[in-house]
Structure formats: C-alpha cells, structure tokens
Amino acid sequence: MATTMVSTDATEGLSLGGQPASHQLRVSRDTTTQLVDHIVGTTKCRDLTDELGRGVVADITAECVALAADVLDSGRQPSAPELDRLRRAAGKWARAGVPLAPIQHAFHEGFSVGLRMVALHAVDGEHAALVDGAVLMFGLLDVVSEAVSSAYLDEYKAVAVQEKDQAHAVVTALLGGDAAASAVAERNGTELAACYEVVAVHFPSHDDETGAPGTREAAAARKLQAISAALSDFFSPAPPLAILSPSGGTILIPDAAETAAEELVSLLTETGGVPVSAAAATAIPEQVPDAAENAYELLRLVQRLSYRPGVYRIADLALEFQIARPGVGRRHLKRMLDPLRRVPDLLPTLEAFVSTEANRKKAATRLVVHPNTVDYRLKRIEQITGIDPMKSSGLRALHAALIADSLDPKKSA
Figure 1 (cartoon, rainbow, N blue to C red):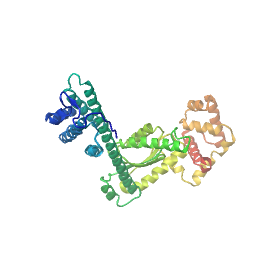
Figure 2 (figure 1 turned 180 degrees about the vertical axis):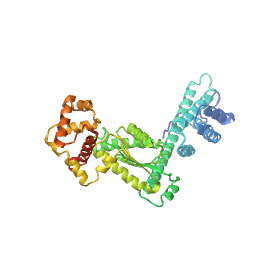
Figure 3 (figure 1 turned 90 degrees about the vertical axis):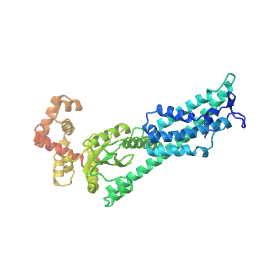
C-alpha cells in the first residue's frame, strides 16, 4: 500500500485561504450530497443509481470525505484497518455482480469534485499549499483505488472458484448417474433442467503449446482460461455446466436451444484459437451418463476419421458408427480395397473422389492431375473391384470400404 506523505505541520495541517484545507469537507452538510449527485449523474450503472445503490454510494462517499479530511490534516495516508469499510463494500459489489469499471469511475469522479471543493478556498500565494493538497488527494485516490480493486478482485475470484466447484459437483453427479443429483443441484443453489445437450469436446494444442514444459503448460492454461471465460458468458437459455481440461471435457447445456451446441463450439473455437471438435447428444437428467458415453464414442470416431472440426451427432455419423462395430461386415468392407493397394494412385484417387462428393474436377484439382486422368483411374477401379464408383450404389459401397479401412487399428497406430 502507498505511504505518500506531504511535509505539513502535524498539528495545524494544510491550510488554504486561512482555514484548514479540510474545512470544506468537514463542515459543509452539502458536501456529501453534492458528491453523490455528481457520481450518480455521471454513471449509467443501475446498481449504483437505484435507491439501494444510491444509499451505498452515499455511505461510501461519506467515508471517503472523512478519509480525505484526515489526510489533509495529517499529511499521511490511511492505514489498512482504516480502509476496511471500503474493502467490505468492494467485496459486496463483487458478490452482487456490479462491474468494477463503473465503481472505479465513481471513485475517480468523486475525488475530482472533492479536490475542486478544496481548491476553491485557495488564495493568491498559496500555490505550493494547493499543490501539496492535490498530491495528498491523488495519493489517497491511489490508496483507495488499490484497496477497492484488490478487495473486489479477491472476492470475485473466490466467487468464481465457488461457482466452478458448484458446477463441478452438479456435472459429476449427473455424469455419474447419482440418484441424488437433484439434491446436489439444490444444495448448490440451482435445479436440474428438464433435459441437457451433452457435448463432448476436444481442444487440440495451440500453436503456442510448444517448447519447454513450462512454456507449454502456460500456453495451455491461457487457452483454457479463454475458453472458460467464453463459456461463462454463454447463455442458451441458461449458462452451461462443464468439467474441462486443456485438451477437452464435457459440457452440459441446460434446456438447449436447437443450435446451441453449434453456436457454443463456434465461440470456443474463436476464443480458444483452436479448431474445436465436438459430439453432442440430448438426454433427460437420468440418461446423461449414457448420452455422455455415446457422445465420446462419436467424438473418438470423428478423430479417428480425421473429420473436420465442428459438432457431430449420431444422425451425422450413422454409417460410420455402424461400420465401426467389429465383425464380418467390417472385415469384408476392408478387404474390398485390397486389390487397389497393388496399383499406384488408385486408392488416393478413390479417396479424393469420395471426399469431394464425386466431383471429378475437384478431385483432379486435389490430385493435381487432369480430369481425364481421374476418369481413367475410376474405370480401372471398376475393372479391378467390379464396383463402379460412378454409380451411386457403387460409390456408397466404396465409401463404406474407405471408412472401414480408416478405422483399421493397424492403420491408425
């Protein structure tokens, strides 16, 4: 804390216009009222301008006026115990969700007007005393701002940690199929939603997550902090609950709007600076564990197939999901491609043709060949496999074979 001191007579204090510089602050009944009117009139924060807020502003203003008068008389800044009341007020504002910026603005406006009140009584020849008074007032503003800001942020962090712990408790209860999940939610000041969008998310490493272990960990922490901040600001129509790590986790969106998962993943991609992959499933509270298991199975499937980032549901991956099941059908599909492995360029051509949705020109561009070359290779594929990729039935079969091949553990190892 600052210990600014101006050299004044400790007995007489600082004088302006033949009176103590603190005179205007101590004797005028209108001083606090004028300051409060000015502060309330220069802020748009309703928490400070409604009836209750104005009362709090009046009390804090009176406290600051008394502190300023004491500083002008003693030449010393207040001690930590003398600032306790301001600290308690800052903590209450943090718990109530009052933004810090208008609070800081209110203090600066109040001190500005208070300094003008003191300076009005200066007369010619009192320049040095006026400067000393200004230095003392600015020193007090510094001390008060530090006390209020630190107390506010300490309480804000404590509340954030508490809310995070409460959210974790509810998510853990739901994911674990705890029969007492409703009671857990109630103990933590909330209630269960009618249904949840269960979203399994994966956050790849950011470009900054390289180098020494400490550097990687710091970058991962920054990524997670940005993602968590964005998550806390998301409502659709209620804030999500989540358990996250730098690599991903589980998000539960209560009573989610139709496109809530897509909107949220887009937001997390932007704020986290990484392409987020996700899988989602909707469930009532009792079915959240099964929905989470299905979502994670879908997410693993998306990653194994190297699909583009975004949100996937079972409707998007029904074919892939079924093919992923071990069995005779999957082995047969995989063997369909074996003859193509013996001829250069045929398998990459088939992959390009399928990934471009059977567009010959796009496939040719991707392969950096002429479209006629693609046509020739597709004919060769038909001759070797007996399946025509130019027909929809043949393309479906070969697409399924490519999926089965991509899911081969040996290939992904």
